[in-house]
Image (cartoon, rainbow, N blue to C red; front, side, top):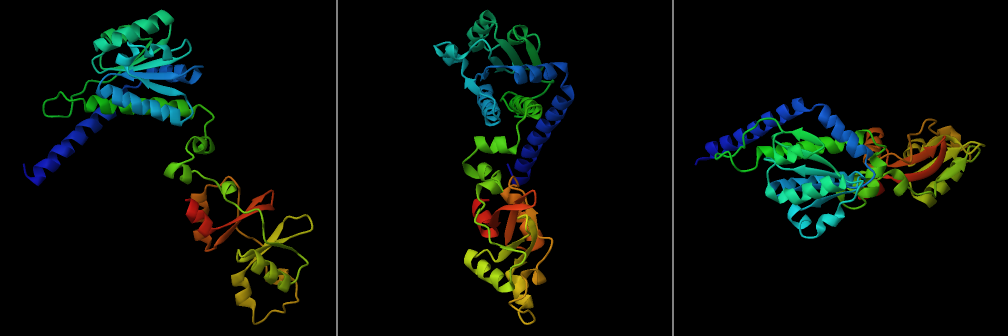
Length: 315
């Protein structure tokens, strides 16, 4: 097979699956809403199960729920039949993925949940299957063809199941009080954790400052000692009146009296940030204003300072 034919096969697979996803989007109905409500109101865990390729998708969906603060776990139905059924408790919700809904490995799991009155949400392709008939809520995948040439390998069906799981997770997330800070607390390591770090995690509270009646030489001394290339000017209420940077000093050095008040070369509107600003956003802000240090303030009082080098190290 030549390169153009290989490319064409790949494009056809993606096109077929994208069409199926569009159909899935349009098919969401009141049962989807019921499923979201059930998951968001549960007081226990989310148990997600499936056999074979559906099991792989179930594992990923469980991981997504857990990463957003909802306790979830993947349960292999075969393992459930051999002792792992005990993970299921009364207040849990069980989500089962099965394209046919007839996998015999699911029967023990379904029977256990029916006896214990544990709610079951099914993701399957037919409402006439064993799984559908024994579920409390059925999420039915629209008619589709698998994307391989034999129309047999789980491809389109697993893609839709994964997308439906993501839709459930994100919909539940949208009605819960879960923000970037909450997400960051669950992802302290890796690139995601770094991207969600805020300035209060890295800011220096030893702020270079002078009073408004201080002289230019006072500003130079403090700026040299703190090594941030700037000094904050405070009024008598300890609120920010302005800022002086090393650039301001260089531009004024030939025409200023070092004994004069520092306010004579002060900028009255410094760039300020809040402590909950993302580090990545702080970098954008500093680049936009061509500054290398950023003052963090609360009610116009300085509470910290960061430089762009520190931000880049933690971004």
